[in-house]
Image 1 (tube, rainbow, N blue to C red):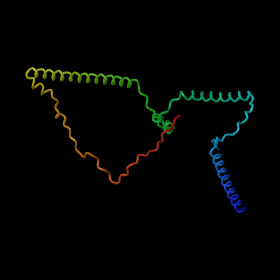
Image 2 (cartoon, rainbow, N blue to C red):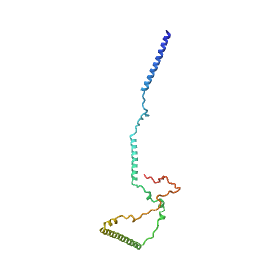
Image 3 (cartoon, helix red, strand yellow):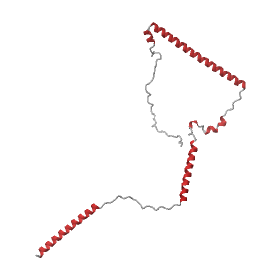
Image 4 (cartoon, rainbow, N blue to C red):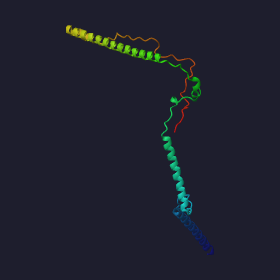
Length: 202
């Protein structure tokens, strides 16, 4: 009888331990599922604001204001300057050699100056008359051509239409030589890189 009781007692003990183990597992699972975390914000506590004297704050603002005004004045001063063109600048070496390069020309007498002025006026008059003669000659030629075409039209309309056609054989065009340039042997073609040495102006 005692052995049977002990067997039942042991069986009950095992059942109770298993039951307790299951309960503990369920509780741990529930605790784990209900356990929630928030993301780490990496924050730090706020620093206490230091009390600053109003006079010190005003001095700082005045310094900033003066600095800005100084920069504005500098920009306004440089705004009037034009960006220099290197092509139009005279090299310093030439400025240094100016006294050696200046030629002293002899003084021209008033008679020579008058003769030169008269020659210039005569040359200008001659070129003017030459130009007028050329214009009059072109006008005479074009007028004679138009009169000849009018007479031809009165004689025959077909001949007039043929005479008005463009003559493509009037200016023959000939070209000789290769159509493409042959390649040069052992020519090292550049790869297109270049060094920009132009100055930067701000």
